[in-house]
Length: 70
Image 1: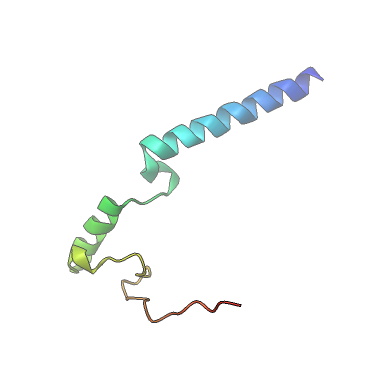
Image 2: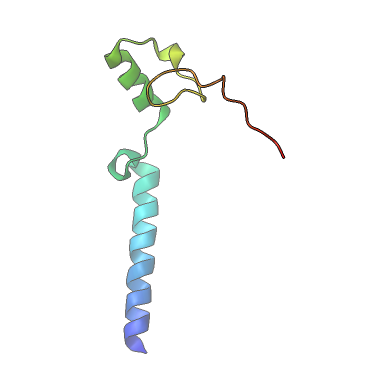
């Protein structure tokens, strides 16, 4: 039974550590913020204002896609 507590504690420790890293240093865990997207866009030669919430990773506007409601 004590091995379960040890493994549970290790899991909890790793989970809390991951969340802390994700909040304070998101680039380490693959989360890309608005500032990083603006930098990438400027390096590709696009204006940072070209970024929209509907833009795909290719930089094309995806506003033509309409969600179908049932």
